[in-house]
Image (cartoon, rainbow, N blue to C red; front, side, top):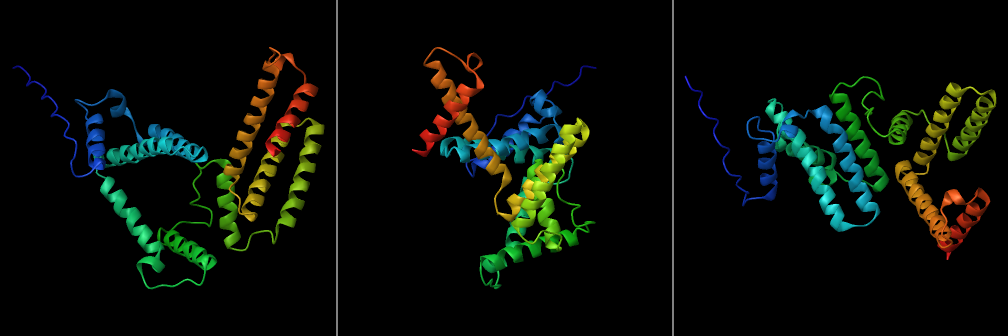
Length: 276
């Protein structure tokens, strides 16, 4: 008996109602076991997760560069990740994109009683406190364990450090002011110096981690996002090093044909040029 031929996929019909529905249809086609893309079909939540994180960073990069054309494209890439995860969940009978949209809509309405209800906050600080209280109630309803249990382990380390200390601060485990944080930072630096001099690599690593953790705490106390601060410093370093390369190139040289003293002088020149 001859097997029935595999039916050809129906032509893709772009939605006239909304482009989002077209994207949902595209993802469904890509995941089709018979007519889809083999790479897309074999993906799982775990294999796609790194791409999701990467796309979020690319959105942040476009914002940092104030490139709105690029931001539109990167937001599309990030939206695709949401649709991809939602499609995989739909295939398992767990939820679909509509459920995702409904969930976040419900959450936004619930967390903004001053907009969608009759609650009134005294000021922005009161509103932020109310927001945190609503989040705490949600966590309690989910029956989470300890205070820190639901801080995602997959966050960038500095971001997670801020969230951990912010959560602990809500229950009173916090330094009173930045003075105590700075004193702790000096203490940790001194401890690192001891381990460096002792040549203990493992303990030096631990002490360096303590320093970074205290720095994240300091960022929280100063209301500074440490990832943003470090990203800006990275950009500044790259910009000034490019200045060094450009100045050396005028003589037909590269950094490896220079020395530290010369490059340090050019670094100072780059700083002076930025101040002007």
